Amino acid sequence: MSDRNPMKDAVAIVGVGATPYARDLGRTPIDLGLEAATKAIEDAGIGKAEIDGICGGGWRTEFTRDANFLALQEGLGIESCAWQTQARLGSGVLHAAHALFSGACDVALVVQAYQLDSRMSQSAGKDPYRVRASEWGKGRGSMGTTGERWFHNAENTSAWANRYMHEYDVPRDVFGMIAVNNRSNASRNDEAVLRTPITMEDYLTARPVRAPLGRLDFDFRVDCAEAMVLTTSAKAKTLPSIPVFIHAATFGQSAHGCERYENGRSWTELSPWIAMPLLWRKSDIHVNDLDICFPYDGASPVAVNHVEAAGFCDAGGAWAFFQEAWDADDQRLKLNGKTFVTTNGGSMSHGESGGMNSFRESVTQLRGKAGERQVAHAQTALVTMGSFYHDTVGVVLRSD
Amino acid sequence: MCSQILISFDIDGTLQSGNPAGPIPLAVVRRAQSYGWIVGSCSDRTLREQRDMWTAEEIVVDFVCAKHNLGELRQKFVATSFIHIGDTRVDQHFAEQAGFEYVDAAAAVKAQEGDAWVSWVDTLAGERTKMAEGNGLCPRRGRAGSDETRDG
Image (tube, one colour):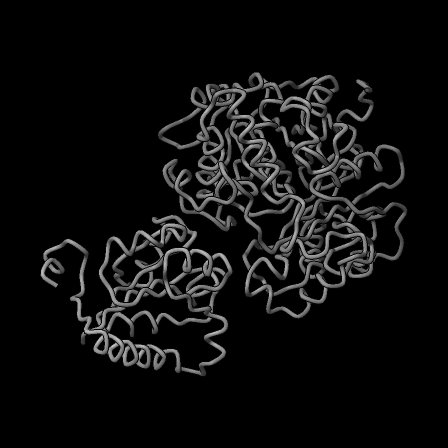
């Protein structure tokens, strides 16, 4: 695999925007996506006509639940584009960076919109739009209604959690430290959907979902959208907004793309263990240099896996490492005594946006604009994204 | 009144104070309390979050508990009827597992109009009183084993 990184610091995030996060906003994904996109464009300080590349969210161009690139371009009134794609989770950021670096486009807009599926809540189930969209998706290459059968259902994550606890002889509390940390951070974030601090006892006594994991081990589904504007670093320096540079970035994919527990050989052969070592080979900034870190927290064991794959500690070492890193007064992790983790509350407490909120929070922190939760002098960030199995990315961001 | 009803409310998607807001106004909770029923919440929210919600609404409840621990209420309280009102199959599952009657908020609200939820409480009170009288059950309200209920 390539250790080259000619893209180093050559692409920057120059605009971020988002909708409110809530359990039921009563709006369509494209409506949400357009609001986030408009805010990101305003934040970048550019005209929308300058956007010539769009990455939408979702699985299919025509899948009506998603803010896809066609609908975004039309909705924003952008006359022409030279690059377009769809992406899941935060992988769109990396796709856009590659497109910008290759010359496929000069200014890229990345949008992800999320909406509770019609079977995820009663209120969502009363929305005829969502019901029709879910029905339409069935049998058309999408996963149909995610509430009915989402391939991220808890069984495989829970199976990995069990195996991890068994093989490394650690208690479930290691996952709980991610949950408590994220909620403590969310309590500092006005945008977060879940802001009431939780204790380890709350975590351990929460409703079981699939043993050993419970309700506080998983991301919290909401209606929301996130958007980012990226451009070349050269152009970024001409814009009024504060750029945040993509220092190094990579995908990482193991041979086991299916969400099946039995497909995985070991904890250390899952996709993060492909991405993270490769990332460090491309980067001049390393794990001990980080001010903030966002291990993807679609589920707490995934976050633990990303932390270990990133090299903060050895495989199976997170329990001991987290105990040393735990600030009892703050109820937060400070890895190596200095690296703050998921300062916005993440998918588990801020709300689930496929990890896009981690990018926005990183940009906000590296711009020094995070207000009450600002990490002093934050200049470097690691964002990891993706599950054990797919769309796994690692991105190192830095300020100027 | 001889009957004693314990009524547990799910919060999110059930009560109007939930997130998302549900169909049941807090007037129903207050009405149930006016009958002297044992009233509280069983939700997926943490106990602290549940307490905070009730405090914000200035309602003093008899219990808060995790939804999957609904059954513990049967050990803690003496009542002739145990009812859980919720909005999901998860609510129904844990209610049935704990031997509670399950009332689906969404379905029930369809049968009610306007303030009829409040009269639903009245109707329920009348029905259960008759039932209790028929069964010869007249326990007093309170915590099991407490001074209030020891001789009940």
